[in-house]
Length: 301
Ligand SMILES: Cc1ncc(COP(=O)(O)O)c(C=O)c1O
Image (cartoon, rainbow, N blue to C red; front, side, top):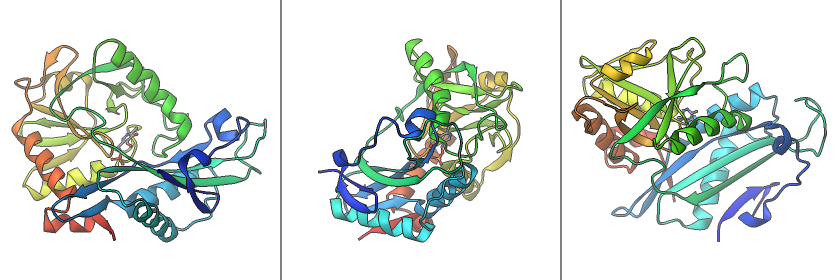
């Protein structure tokens, strides 16, 4: 039975429900996180990846949306560990914390509305293929920070994602790449983007309307640790067509190599050596197989 923590208690997931008049359901006034926990079968341990970093971002998102969370990062960590240990998972899991404007109020505002918090967890495998995807540059633009803050993980913002990713799927692609209104590359539909050119790993800056990805940060460290030069700078669309390697990185997609873009091969049209190396180290790290990255992980007892 799947559990949720909702209204200060652990309940079966199907009992954690809201009214159709809920503010966040009507206006998208919520914030969420996506956190993965990886099961290591050999060790019989479940590792939560970057738990503290996700809740720190959650608190920042809530502050942008004037959501009064009512829990500290420490309390959120404790609750999440308890949620997982109560369910005794022996498989990979996706954890979804959600904070939202909960009152049944017909008024578009962030003020004077009671906020709720919930967290639940479900088994989850790959979100996108990890053996090479074909992406398109979307005709939809990534939301502008001055329209909907792009560094906050706001529920309503994901209309932007849904529009782009649905068009990509209907056109036969695996995912969409967003450009900014200014024409630079921002990110994938729900993942940050890395490009390799002449041996340097390049990713757009946090001022290019990206979500400040936690995996992005991990990959920048991991890349430097294996001796790669990492550069944060604007990326032009056509650089994507001439780069040596390209991949998406995010909690959901993990490391998803892009082998084709807009009907052109990336490099040789297969997973590049650098991407392959980063991908395999990442997969080992998240399952607790690389001692130097154990501090990424929280063990569920
Ligand atoms: C829009 C967007 N960008 C980037 C990411 C990657 O962020 P993270 O690595 O923190 O999961 C996500 C994933 O959640 C996302 O939804």
